[in-house]
Image 1 (cartoon, rainbow, N blue to C red):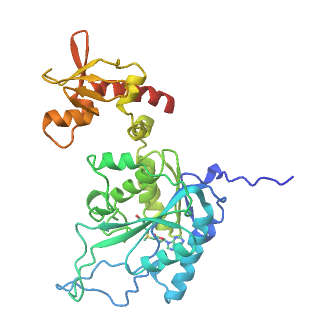
Image 2 (tube, rainbow, N blue to C red):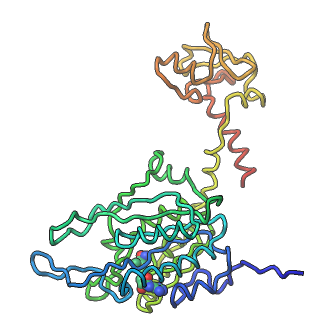
Length: 370
Ligand SMILES: C[S@@+](CC[C@H](N)C(=O)[O-])C[C@H]1O[C@@H](n2cnc3c(N)ncnc32)[C@H](O)[C@@H]1O
């Protein structure tokens, strides 16, 4: 009999920063074991000269050795290796986010498609406070691109549409995100006030990424953890995480930062309740289930307009027949109307909005979901 290879991740690797090369370290992870990957790889900025501001002070650019590659070919080879491992460890239902700038994102995007990842969006992170272009020879580079892709074309990836909409004051979240670069208290600095990590990402960026594309308790992998941003936000949102980083100084700073991050209560991160918003309940269901009787009268809040409920869930008012929304809109003189709040039913001489009954049905559904 064939032995089934387990894709359970050893407990000792979870909620840990693994010290080492990302490609070699990912090989310790089983196939199809990770729910979500966020990768912020070296940019390959290829900065040869020191940059100076007009007052001759030095610009704080990314000049670390980890960002240096001899040429595009060696950068591509490096990228292929870690992307190959990402594809292997990602669950079939998983997705991956990769952030980069014009220096590297097009090369990475091309390779991701060649590996069979299925692009879902490219997010533009528009920086409210980008670094100016000191030499004045190009436009200020004020954004980075984040590719979001599913494991393959047929993946049933996670997308918490309602949570993102709710985060955005009930407006559909767009693919251009305006978020400041990491500054202020959030920025890790040493005793002399120098940045500990040159490319520490803002937590707000990871917040949207993790909230939108994973569930509580999911396992999130960051193969280039740096200062630990992904782990910190994963912890705040009640997700599990694995980080890989090869620089011990960054690991020390990240571990300290993660230790100082508190875990939320399970109730606060449970967003299952928003599943109810995906359930559409037609008015007819209220009639079918006897919440509203056939022939019952519905009223607007001041009882000025009255309609009678018909057997098929439509309303009749004077000579007009239509949905709760259509008849409500007719009386309001508007193109559309929310019939659930416009129409009321009468119980013990009191009027209640139809929406109360819809909520009752939804909370029964919630109990089944939970
Ligand atoms: C762009 S930074 C990531 C920053 C991170 N997102 C944050 O918010 O702090 C890339 C990180 O990858 C690390 N790195 C570069 N090459 C690596 C490799 N081959 N294996 C593991 N880590 C590597 C660097 O030390 C650096 O911290």
